[in-house]
Length: 183
Image 1 (cartoon, rainbow, N blue to C red):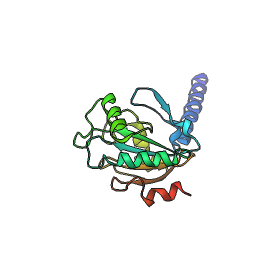
Image 2 (image 1 turned 90 degrees about the horizontal axis):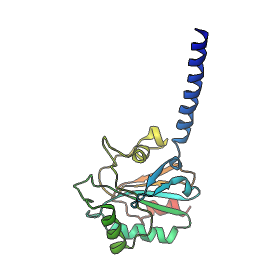
Image 3 (image 1 turned 180 degrees about the vertical axis):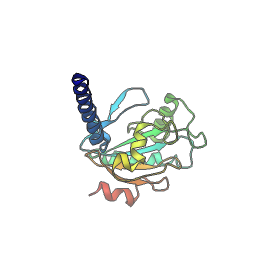
Image 4 (image 1 turned 120 degrees about the vertical axis):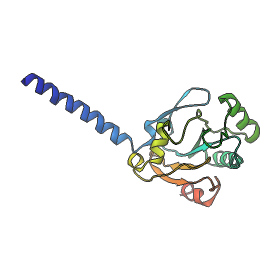
């Protein structure tokens, strides 16, 4: 009986420690690894020290021209900012293409050179874990956000902490975003 209790105590300590470590890591986006459009892992920890702008994108949306502004923002500030686009087909099927088609579209039409991740769900039952973190205050420690359309933007600081959320209508080069980057 004592051995069983001791075993449960050790199990409690181990599981409790693991749970605590995961909770502490949840306030940093750097704990995530996502796949690129090419299927290669992108550990977000490699961007420590740089701000991240995470954007759910679509190739056939009224906001698709924002790719030009995102690329301009990335080109101008890539020494301190990384933009990562996450294609999503959840809003009126506005990004139905394959990974190859999405990549070719972005490069050909907008000269996109910032990282593009694999197509994911940004809401609902199949929401990607990174978007659960981005949209839920209990995970990111700062805010709740509802993804209602394409081109929502999340700004993360160099320590991997949530800074701000911007809806689709906020353009990449708007003062709303630039004021954080130019600090």
